[in-house]
Image 1: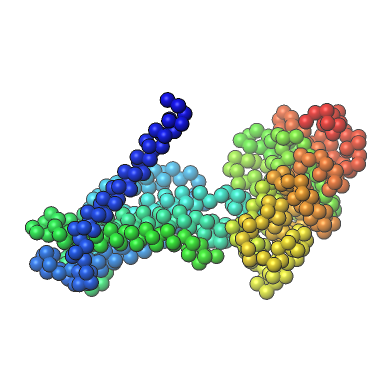
Image 2: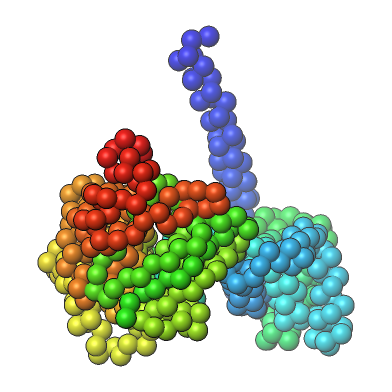
Length: 274
Length: 251
């Protein structure tokens, strides 16, 4: 085979991977959009479900998902930033802690659900509530978020640390003014990954936040998140399949918007931090 | 009294000396060049003076460093490094604007906000960069050329009014024209700031320094073969290997 022919073959072989990935995304989006677009209107987004979800809307599920996301990310963000920064900038090898975090991030999410039910719902007496669910997903995403924060900070050129040390700068000042803004894109990507995991979680939240379809009145109320509603409509409610597809479309659109935000966020974060 | 005095300084990495038992006095407001081939421990010696060797967890320093009569061991890292600045081989501007590169360390060291614009301008003037950047102080520092970035780093260091400025091959990554501009800036600084310059460029040592210290690689670690006025050391070095090196017969 001539070198040029080899390059053509390599191009086709290497191109097949990305092409398959794109085809998969387009295929799933097409399936969900074709099956769900007809059912999604303003009414569907704000109204409560009727007839076990076969009719009506998913307003309470959107609200419940918002609560869980806000509580989960809100609790994991400061803890994760703090712990990741400590690991990247101040700790020694800390092998035990790193090992523990790696094991935790590989633990199946259902195990976190059992922990959340035992700890937040029962031991702390929060019951089946959006607060219990949010805190449980916070614990679930924390290990991943800590390690990604650490990796993001370690990715920042060590020249800045050497220059800061040579100028006798307090490490905190260098961190706030230079290292964290430089790591902002990586931190935003970490946050997006964590958000995606929260949005896609269903079983964990069945254990801790319940499956109530009533509009949540606050963090102490139970609620059913979107991903759990998809499962319930598809498996538990005869004739619920079309609503499962329509709900999936809303979930997919939410993830698209989150991704877009995460792409725009780094520049904004860097500007705010300066 | 010397601005800087090293007495029996040894720097070790994992127990292996990089440079052994160096004693050196640097008079205030003068330029001293440390020359020597690769592996003679020039940079290790320089980093030890403002304790930056501590960034490498495996380095250890013995001996004494005196700064204007004060034992450096009695100064905390922040105070020591404010009194002894350091310029790296590669320019290391922060990813901030030109002005902010200088203003941020000043604020971090507690300089009053009202004083900062004047201090920024004065530092840029002394580093011979003001004319080139005065109309674009808010432009990113990384938009500057390599030589301008190095002069910005010099301005950033001298804005803190250090007594001594250490320079670790400050022109090694620059082209000849940029090197000339940085050398001009260093000549302008000498007299008010004490400069200790590590270089493997003998011509640069001759052009800039009044005193030269020659390190030579050895077992164990680099040792000081000669130190004295530039005119004497380059014409009548204390060791035959130095004579061969200066004459271009080795190295």
